[in-house]
Image (tube, rainbow, N blue to C red; front, side, top):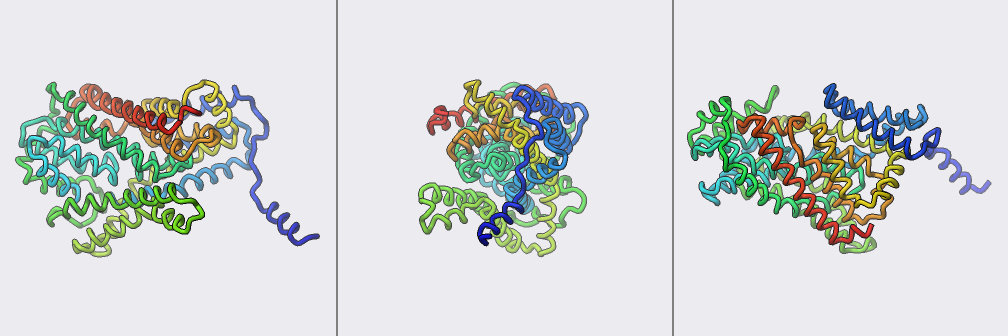
Length: 501
């Protein structure tokens, strides 16, 4: 036999078999299985308080069984879903968490606040803190960012005799918008991984959209804050500890002590002068600029150009974040005299909080893979195509509904992208259009933040408002920002010719 033929035969024998359901089910039955799967997921999370990772994994296996995927192949599908998704997102989420933690512990957030309050003046503290929130939210998770900035909000609330929500509402609004739409945050990165979207394009487009949303958050927040709201006694007592902005350092020091938990680092950056605002802004901007340069280079140059590979390497999001972390190590840790053990402790502290998020992302990848292998994704794709609605609108609506039902933005995004994978992959969309679809799904996960969302309780608790006032202000603001974010995304969709599909 020809050696080449023998070699090909061996390779074919070693190649993994294509997994298919044992029985081909009809479209109505497949869609029914999908609907029951999503309903079961919501019941497990909302009614029985099952952790989202366990719920997603359980539902995925249940859907695989119902769709007649052979028993021997189910966990092959599970493994494939985990590997495909985590391979794309784990590094981004982990490096982003490390960078955000180093900026937080070094006192960089304090430095940004001092800089912008000084620039805008006391009469425009709300504008200054909204600007700070925008910048801090890029590398720092939403809940962490709100908690770290609380002492600064309290200090100015006490000084100007105003309710903390006056400053906190617009600031938190834009922080959540960035959290759901801008990499390296987990939901949007996971969505990009599931749909195969370019993270660099998403970063460029979502940041451009979030700039006007920052102005909108400030003005809508100002309108909502015209009426007086009750200040909860617990926050009123905390405000008594703050006399003027000079006490922010002490509050910041206490905040680290109360939020870092067991095994917290012994570093107390509040004792030292915080790093300059310019340095912190440069650290935040470095990965963004690097990703943008690489993305533009790969879009402009043909793949055969000798510099194409250079730009592709430079613009790889994981490499860009790694460069930012290395710079932070030298510019924050080394320059501030942190020992290697202390710096290592900071690195380690940044990872446990994202453990559950990574597991949710992995389980979301499993759900998407099950939908694809079972044929549910293709059935859903053909059904959605027959409805005549743009896929970007469907993604937004599904994500918004899932967000309102179960609270987690990450779960809403990964579930929605899993449902729409087949429709996107088979729709012939351009990289820019796929990026816009992911962003629209992200903004769907921004709206309707209410009692099912942990972020809602962070805002209510730390800014001292009642649940009723939280629903009237925070829930309304996040919904307005989500709708506005989608409207701007849809406008870009039209400009790039998305409606042609």
